[in-house]
Length: 92
Image (cartoon, rainbow, N blue to C red):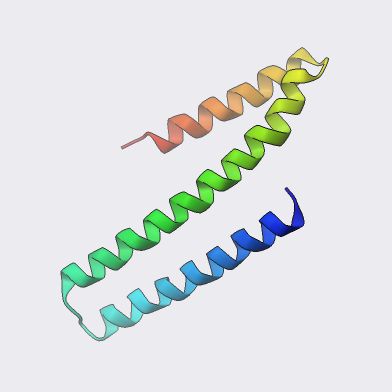
């Protein structure tokens, strides 16, 4: 992952961290439940965005390198990783 992209994602995670602290304060202040839930959904969406960006980077670097490489075991390993990530993401 390039330094610029990594720094952007770290910045996003720090923003998310601030939002989580805000949710914690909302709970401490006993704010309206629906407002808290909406903030939680916003954090989840932001985390999903970071996850998607990291996966995109991985697909366009590590996976492509493995697929183009000469090691069939490495190709299989990387494809199994992607399958496992997809399965984990789609669990209910």
